Length: 69
Image 1 (cartoon, rainbow, N blue to C red):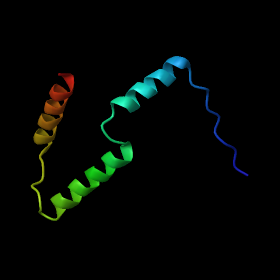
Image 2 (cartoon, rainbow, N blue to C red):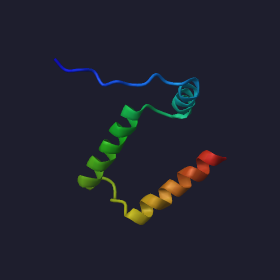
Image 3 (cartoon, one colour):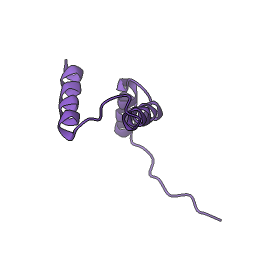
Image 4 (cartoon, rainbow, N blue to C red):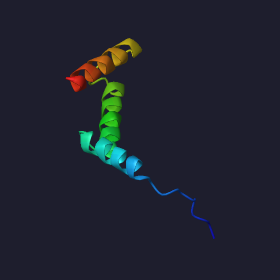
């Protein structure tokens, strides 16, 4: 019989933080992973161009700027 891992109860501050993170997320984590996998599949199939690491960092910087406005 496996024991359940012991988890500490969330504090009020931790609970509020998780609610704010969840509320600000444009989609669920599952949706985000699914979209990423679909994009990788399209890159491998040659349907969209592969991104370089520099392009990825550039995209991340752009997303941060858009989110900060």
